[in-house]
Length: 166
Image (cartoon, rainbow, N blue to C red; front, side, top):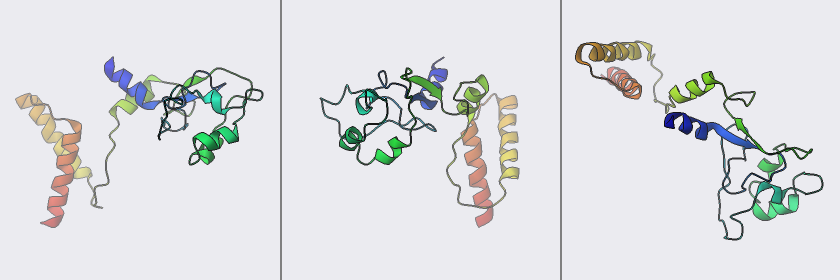
């Protein structure tokens, strides 16, 4: 359950409606592709501001003056966001799916996806990865030793680099 909660927290973002329930400084509302919160110097007076405070009350469009005062460096990025002009409530969106709706499949994929750094080689890693998966399988079956997937991959990359330099 806690793993599921962590996945949700990592990939949920706020979609701006009327801005009344989205905290300006504490909710991930700045992006529709990844959860992104506003960062910067925060005064005690500003800590409880909501997104509605930077929207015009009458038309629910961005108040450019308020945005320039609060976020001069983020102005262009914020102006690209589309908010509700009908006064709909703010909502959450699953940012890993084009429909913004959570699916079990997208949750599973995000939980098991590996974010790998660049490895610095153009060698074909496939045979190395297969070999180390095979040896990890053997360790599990014959010695009941579990190997984390990231460790298997790291070993494969290290062995491939060692082979190239030998």
